[in-house]
Amino acid sequence: MQLARKAWYIFDKDIRQEYKTRYSVNAILLFAVVTLVAVSFSIGTFGASPDIKSALLWIVLFFSAMSGLAHIFVREEEKHTADTLKLLASPTSIFLGKFIFNLVLFVVLQLIIVPLFFAVMDFSVNGVSTFLIILILGSIGLSAGATIIAAIISKASAKGALFTVLAFPILLPVIVAGISGTKIAVNESNIMAAASEIQMLFAYSVVIITGSVLLFDFVWKD
Amino acid sequence: MLSKIWKLALFFWMSMVIIGAFLWAPLAQGLGEYTRILYFHVPTAWVTVLAFLISAVYSALYLRKRDIVLDKRAEVASQLGFIFCILATITGSVWAKMSWGSFWNWDPRETSIFILLLIYAAYFALRSAIEHPERRATLGSVYSLLAFITVPFFVFIVPRVYASLHPDPLINPQGKINMDGKMLTVFLASLFGFTVIFLWMFKTKLDLVSIKMSIKKREI
Image (cartoon, rainbow over all chains, first blue to last red):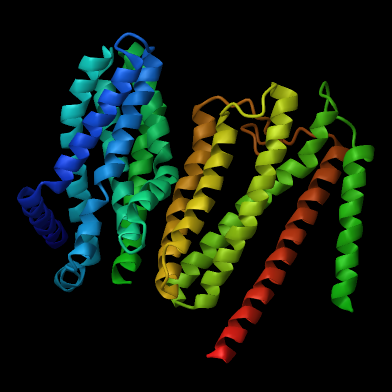
């Protein structure tokens, strides 16, 4: 319980800080809109099959995540607030707080981008519940992976380019399962049709969150 | 003297493997001469995974004991693993051209080996972006372990979920080895030979690294 409350404090602090500058929200949203417009403009509304559109949706989501989710740790390093934070809270609570922040940020992004994608790409799904579950589990896995990679690259030089390079191989299971699950959701309304994708996303989320919590101590105390 | 005998024995062993692979072992039923690449492709892929495992083990040990030598071992294992990964990719691609008709078509197995290449490359990119040696070692180790826990998804889960055309003579769902006796002999001999070559390279490279480190210490 202590841990949950501390994680909540960290989350609360980051939300307040974000509210002051709105850097991450603005960057990630504009980036996502620009990517979506570029995709939509170059393909046209009716030009692509649902399979291609499913893949494009996840590519837009992935690169938008890459544009903004690293900021959570880079900010601490750039403003030299990381050391104070080290004194105040345990690594696990910091990781969980920042992970929840990234998750919320990413879900907010999806609330705007996904309906927009449906509208401009003339995209529709039969299995709405399948699609939502895939999206939620995918967001959890993606933001957990992105958070630990953000912690790693915040201590390196050439942060921006490195973030995508390091995150892509780690996050690819999510993208692969997400695309495949979305393709199934387009055609099938039965949720069991995407059972293996859902299992894979769930297993991935559990593994990556556990691994990140264990490894984050070493990154943070360095 | 002993080490010389040992190297000569390895030379003859590998020569026998090459001769056996091309001349002695029979062809797989219904398939052409190109199947002989199996004796070189599978061992390189196996060594890739082995090097990846060794690198992860030394990374974990480094995080526990904070000895920079352990990190060097992890790095050397990764470097050699990268070379073998390239070899496995190329031999696999050649085989794919002969048997499926194109060098590359994103079969789940091709995807997983490509991801392994990407992980190795990202690991080196991360290491080159950090100047402080201990910080480089720590973050490199963390990334190596993080990659290690996601690799099972590519190697085992993705090819199971999505149908792959890749033949699986060693680890298949039925748990059977469907190879002729002679083929199996050559195959296992090759697997052993490649593993010994890898360990030898690993040791040589480590000796080189320790010599470099001692020279640096003397300069200081």
